[in-house]
Length: 154
Length: 252
Ligand SMILES: Cc1cc2nc3c(=O)[nH]c(=O)nc-3n(C[C@H](O)[C@H](O)[C@H](O)COP(=O)(O)OP(=O)(O)OC[C@H]3O[C@@H](n4cnc5c(N)ncnc54)[C@H](O)[C@@H]3O)c2cc1C
Ligand code: FES
Ligand code: FES
Image (cartoon, rainbow over all chains, first blue to last red; front, side, top):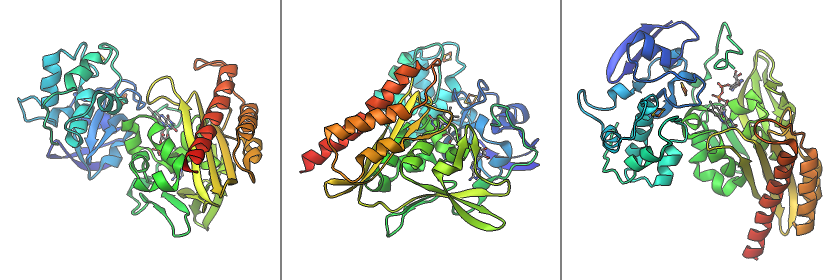
């Protein structure tokens, strides 16, 4: 089936095979490997994207289901060449180790800051509860985002 | 099922595009209706449930994690019939039904008859579930949902749903159901029966908690031993009911 959608502001058209996920479409067909593929079961959050304004695991959305939707991936979260304030804060605080979880965390955190510009540590932990990081132990991530002057829009 | 590669259907029906199924509302008579595409997140943020259906309000933020709650639905979760699913217990405790629609029209199936076993429901192959219906309360609804999880966002090690309708100082109707302690959602009817038609007291709370623990059929696994899980059913049942008793005493 042919799906038409908007990805990071650009209209795109792609042919998808029926069981393919939105994540496969983004990574394999559209050349956007920022969203990571790890569990493919909705457990880890490394594939997080914004779909029509909602934070979702792109591995659990069928590509066909994204027809007519607007998707923002980590590649589109900031202006080209610039860092999103969340990325800036994580970079400054050294909240990245292997980096595999980072794109998903950035998208989920950007989504949080878009609705709650001054989250508490508890709110940050709750918002990131669907994102697994096997390296940092989360402390550095939460500290990076807590109190960060982040004015985000999406 | 698809994400686990247990199923790869040749054809899939996408119900997300069916208009106007994303509602949840309370009818004039107090019946609560949840449409098939109403997400967990809609229920979590609902201003209706806090006052009208406390058991549902307690469960909504405990289902999965925030990202999963954006997409997953209550009706889908009941259809999925996972013994670890939170909504099937809540709906069972509330005596709720699923409205199925097929080529021959609609029928209503009580959730306790709808969930047949692990990942099996009572829908015919040509039916979809369009709505969950929580019947009119027979008094002032009260209740709670408690869930033990290994970490935020995990499936339940043990979950207990308690829903009662108060009529004056009496319990007019009671429902208790258990998550993750058997091959399917368990309705702890004998426990609920202990509470019906009398006031809540420390004594009948103790008896109900004991009967709920007896109704559980837990298995030892990586989440804990069977004894531990049974004990948690006892503790959670008693904790929810004791909380209700205390708020009743404070209000008096
Ligand atoms: C990481 C993760 C953690 C989770 N943790 C929890 C948890 O802690 N507690 C919990 O309760 N759940 C949990 N879930 C499951 C989640 O709640 C989903 O909502 C649930 O699996 C149903 O998803 P869905 O509504 O998208 O339905 P789908 O996944 O689309 O469907 C599930 C099944 O039900 C059928 N179905 C769905 N809707 C209908 C309908 N209207 N009519 C007929 N058949 C239908 C589908 O064909 C399919 O077989 C978790 C899921 C993930 C990915
Ligand atoms: S790859 Fe999607 S949640 Fe893990
Ligand atoms: S930095 Fe390695 S998984 Fe998070």
